[in-house]
Length: 491
Image 1 (cartoon, rainbow, N blue to C red):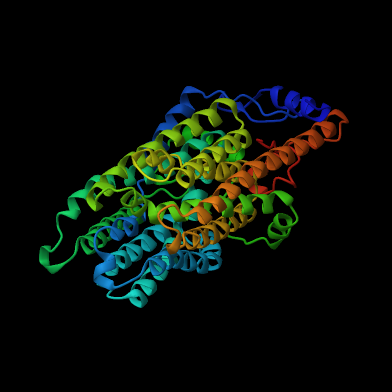
Image 2 (cartoon, rainbow, N blue to C red):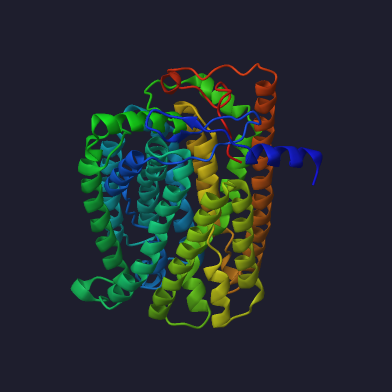
């Protein structure tokens, strides 16, 4: 181990407790600038339980197109395999198109009303997809679906970063994606049942899938609009005056205070940081594989020799495997507080999955490759790293929006790499995903090193007596992580 690594590892292990007004232990910098070990008071545990009960998310996954592929959409609309790839990709063109207005609207509107209204429109659009008769109509509807969904992840990321401590956020980012994975498993069971609705009311099974999931999404939008808490002191948390003081302490820790002023200086600061571009590349590379697996999962299973309905059922273990991988990633990250290392490890797993899909000719054993191909665990580590290491409201929104732009690009390009004439093994596309996963793992280590270096510099300021005191109104100043020298990075 190098001298630099020994020094930075020593920094991360040293701790100094700062008592907050509620008796809990606040994060801070020790003489060696390491993150503290946080201890919850009984009162704060009660507050967290209130937040959890009010904020448990449920998300309907957009894998309906994957089910549609084996439920008759090819036959009903006359689309080709290449056009199907474009239907997967064009969704993210709409997603990307909405990122600039979304960046502004998230800062200006109450998140509950904004997200709820978007979900209602999105659900209606999903149901209307059942009316598509050809590629052009389906492409237009898919673009609109992506356009409206473009707000959802960014809004939920921001909401989690607002109400949870940095150390808690990995659990909730993971929970968000676990809900998506559960929807794949549960959706497989429901999709299997929908498969038997073929011809009911003169509609195909894929049309019923769009109508049913669109209706569920619209209902969720109405619920979110009315009941979703969208700020740290939401009335839905039913906080007492004493509990509101605890929330103030938590706000100081997560360094996110809602601010309607868009600060251009925060954007300029982000654009000058190398880690910003590392995050963008990780997001893009990981989602190449995500976009392809999300859209082509059922077709890959059919190509192994299974029937269309069996492919829907065999997608259930895919969701279960993703839940297990996410749970392991969340546990390791929470246990060892090492997001960069966990991200590195969980980039290797989908790389192995893509390798198995590429090298195993056919048969049920190939399913193992599909079940290991989930890129959501390292993506959760990516978003956790952004949320926990970027301060300043505008800067955090800009980082998150940049991440989602890269997410769109990856998901757009990924399905197009699955070229029809290479089926069923898709060697060219899968080889590209293998290289992308490897590069993502290395970029996680680079970001970790950058954060360690920053902590080392702040340690030296503390040793030299040049570290400024923590401002009393720290949470009101909306400082970035660069401006606030007392900010501790979590590598």
